[in-house]
Length: 107
Image 1 (cartoon, rainbow, N blue to C red):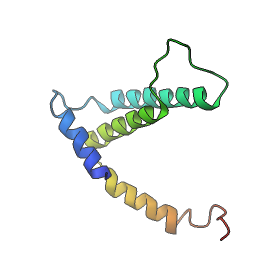
Image 2 (cartoon, rainbow, N blue to C red):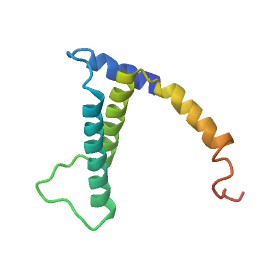
Image 3 (spheres, rainbow, N blue to C red):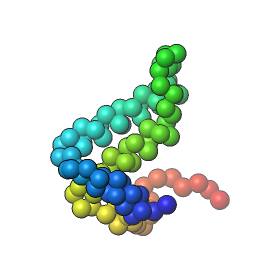
Image 4 (cartoon, helix red, strand yellow):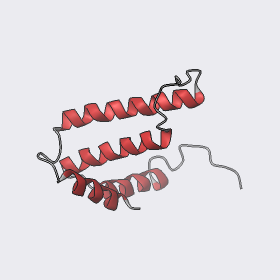
């Protein structure tokens, strides 16, 4: 699924409400909360902190999707096309700034 389609799905959902999107600072606060939940899941999976028996079973995959959802909300609110920006970033990574930055695998 493309980022364009994901953004459209989020926008269609958000347009049911008034206002469709919260102010950007509130969305950023929500993004920070969601990233914190990703960190918590990673800590449960790979760190020494294990889940309590009564804690939610939402997994890392769902927490990452929540981050993507909020990123789409912020982008839609600001008129940013994530698909276009993704393509620019990948070109930058592959062919420009980061082209020789990291050691490549040997064939």
